Length: 187
Picture (cartoon, rainbow, N blue to C red):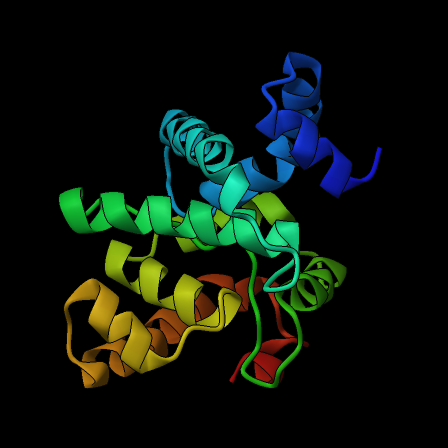
């Protein structure tokens, strides 16, 4: 069933369609939530809260403004950010995107090719201070500007820039022993 028909059935409260939509996007939403927390239980809570907001607001989705995946991703990121601003929870960015414009998945593939597993990369990023994780995630993976990050995190634009620079430096130090060939690409 195509996504638009599935959404229409969900809006009319069809339980089978709601289940289908949930299972079609649960892995994506969970993965997105995992980037923002060190705790699997917290990621599941974020996922659950995100799906509640998604189902509650399905009638507002407009396919002319954004794809469904973009729309649900935005809801998820905003759910996590709202909690971060409320509680200052630890955050996680689990895929690396170089400053040279490659997508995070492409760069992750390069890192894995050099002997870094996704688990090792996640472990290295989890050891970054929480605000560095947040800025790295929003800037590199979500493509937010430093102005938007600063506004949302209630910090100065210069702080956002310096936190991103420091996060990359720390990540490089944590991974450099595994990445002799990749060292220049991360600089």
